[in-house]
Amino acid sequence: MAYDDVDQTREIKQLVVSSGGTFTMSGATKTRTGQVYKFPVRVGNPGATATVGYVKSGADTCMLTLAQNATADTYVIHLTGFKCGDIVTSMGIAGQIESGGNAVTIDYELREMTAVATGCTDASLQAGTQIAKSADYLVNDSTDLATPHICGEGEQMYMLITCTTAATTDIELLYVSLTVTEK
Image (cartoon, rainbow, N blue to C red; front, side, top):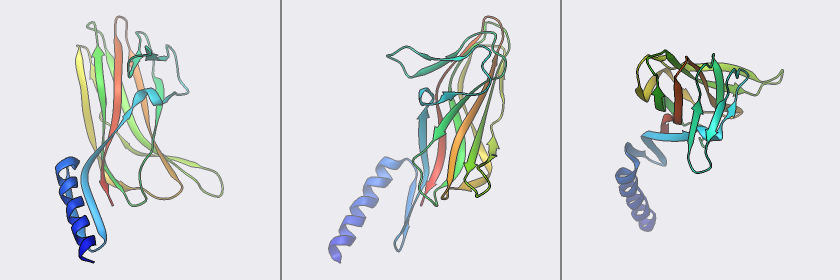
């Protein structure tokens, strides 16, 4: 039994150093708060609306771009890797806006599909604060969930991104993120 205690202590030290959040342990329950999961936008798929269309930029980059004159173009990023009981507390998006003095908007929303006997349901968990700019802008925005979301069986979270670009503007996106308390 002493050997298990030594291994758990070693694990605690490694997690505190590497996690960036806090680690607590109560009996067999381990909790890590403030864990940031990053999801590259290139792994997503174009949504239903594509006036201009998103482009997965180049074979040697991880960027997603949207050119000028797009109207509410949508893009979906599937969010995976969570355990039942994990708690999502905030969400974010990162990239860059090239405005050319014209208007650009980025809307991002955390959504969830849930399997039910009558068919899957689709619900919003939290909409992010709209990013609306008419000047160049470093996108590094986040929004706390009004009600933290507890991950469960039969659910699939995704981020829905909706962007509009005017003439001489474009958007480059790198990733979306979720901050999670791991259980």
